[in-house]
Image: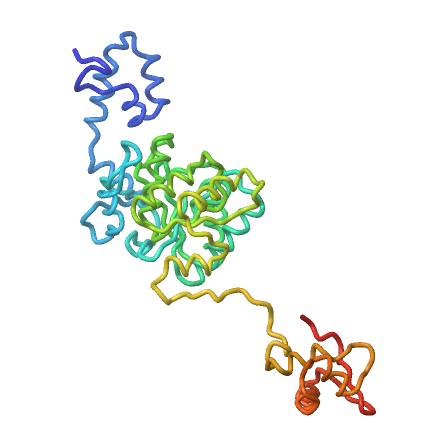
Amino acid sequence: MSRIGEPGEPRLTDLVHDLGAVTVLAELRAKADHRELGDDLAARIAAADPAQELERAEARGIRFVVPGDDEWPPALDDLAHAPHLHHRGGVPVGLWCRGPLRLSDAVAQAVAVVGSRSATTYGGGLAGDIAAVLAREAWTVVSGAAFGIDQAAHRGALANRGPTVAVLACGADRAYPTAHRQLIDYVADTGLVVSEAAPGCAPTKIRFLARNRLIAAMARGTVVVEAAVRSGALNTASWADGLGRPVMGVPGPVTSAPSAGVHQLIRARDAVLVTSGEEVLEVVGPMGSYVVADPREPEQPRDLLAPRERQVLDAVPLLHAVDADSIARTAGISPERTRQSLRVLARQGLVEHSLGRWRVVGEPGP
């Protein structure tokens, strides 16, 4: 008789993973002889009818997409060559999808936005703003439907009628966290809910880690908005880096613990610092498609002056009007050229002339 944990037989952790902790615990309590438990539960798994499972899933609006299907995104195949961060790496056998979007279409042009579950107002606002910009440009926002940054990212995309994909660590028919059932159902109505776990499966720690690789693989780049030094979002960033996809980090206050992991990504792991959705698009978009201009102050009339007019203007007093010769001496320019420049400045409304004397009109500025 086979036993749990014996070579070639199921381990208790495997059974918990496949059937769920509640089912296994109930069986443990019910069995007089725990040594037979491995045989009984393994037989239950083996007896499952794949066709019936697919029919039940289809009745709930869930389809199973596998490599080779028209709906399968080629980007997921890159996982075959990525360095595995744990034993749940590699290309998934298939993905359970719920929603009207085709998986391949949804992630053809996508960005992952992830971060802390304990997001601050600052982080949540920025995540929503970045997702909104991506949505307006018809980019799909991929995230994990968790509290904090994930939630803000999905809502930012949905508020701008953009596509969004929620990748879950439980079955696609379930809501985790349960408080996000309305959000997840709305994503399923308008976008796509995806899971590697079969319908009905509960979330587990290993499934969260496995889920992170899918988020990274579905996107052309990953943006981390707030992440502590020990954060699941950093695991997603590691997968993106291993896949050769850009990793971007949104900086926070240097004293903020929720941003410490992001700062480490930027400082030591070559993440690109971004502060807006436009800057994210500049990183992930085709070269030259999205170009962000360097920030500048609004142009002032003084900025358009030639060097000589600027030099003369600097020599004109603000409070007390003086004659042109006095201005020429202060500017170090000949009186004739000074008068020429004063006439130019007067036409531009920067100086005024009265009774043979000149003064600045208002504050000339820097």
